[in-house]
Picture 1 (spheres, rainbow, N blue to C red):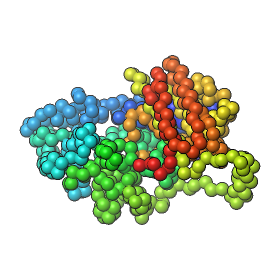
Picture 2: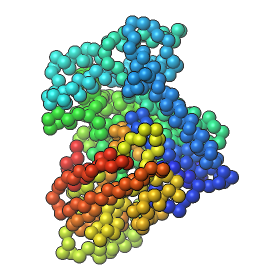
Picture 3: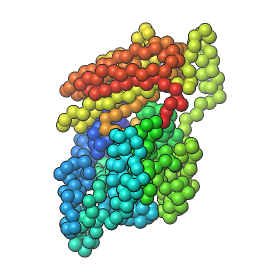
Picture 4: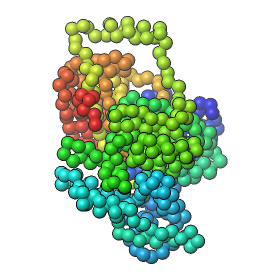
Length: 510
């Protein structure tokens, strides 16, 4: 489709001059962002004929997510799933959605040879407990957890639409349930005649539906900050994208890191694959395969994918090997490239930027800026946030992130609003392993906004947050980037619950 007008509600862009179109104008793109939705971050894009129509679509999406969370959530005590879980050896009439998800676990358990199993939760709990004690589970406990997971945990009756819960083993509907919810929420929005396309991104799992091609960056599992260089850029239309990996969630036992993804057949955390990204027209299929590909060997994953039409994937192994489906290359989005003339210009400029006597930032070092947004009861959208780096003269060196609402609210970010800004618009999505709710990591690679390494010395990291009809907060922390690694914790505030700086060697990444 043609490039739309941009209506902004929580868009991470760098263009203050955009305004919302009037209802009479052509269709536009509405963007909203939130946290603590299904336990992670949530980005929503809607292409609609008017701003009011987009707002109605967002309301439908939110309502459908809340409805299905009330049915399927393992974390909400009063969900239908948890109520059913409290019963034993009793045929209980269940909703269509709970029945479909339970049936989906049966299907994918069979299709993956047992790699997909809701009872993997018991094994997860075993390893979480082990992390608390500081030692890995005993072989006896591990094998018992495997035996518990291998039981038949429920019996479905298609004719009477009932589910009979038959064990006391812990169960959790992870794996593809989030994709199931996203798919139905997307359908709810597309039911409006004024809506032509929708993109939902829940913590790195996406559903793209309608007349729209979404550019999706695939996060590097060993450099997964929000603004880190992606390992691939995809052009996705009418498909779902799911990524699962070991790099954002898991447990630390001693000096070893263990993935939160466990193998129900062995009782051990998955350890051969660092990340798997799957693209498929069906959201549940994408979600199930992304998890399974972390548990199965790459050869087994390739064999399984060959039996499923339209399944494309990228598997990154722990050794750094990339394994892709035959159709993966067809999904890659074109990457901008420098001409030979522009490369010469950049080289000439580099030679004139920093005197030779000054030491430049070491290319093998980086700064990670970790922060967590506060959860506000009853607040759906994120606060407006800007993160940048200043030199000792308080001049901007590098803009790292800008998340804000409608352009008229940009001045609420008072310090950032005074800085020079580019006109680049970046509305692409990122697929990655699911993050913790409200938790973000940004990377500064030591380069300025022109892409050149800065000299070593003192710089100030600025984190600014403002909430519509709420508070204004500004964090400033100076750090000496002299080549010696260090960490610094910042005091939290009303909008930013916590923040920390980690100046480190890139080789220290897990």
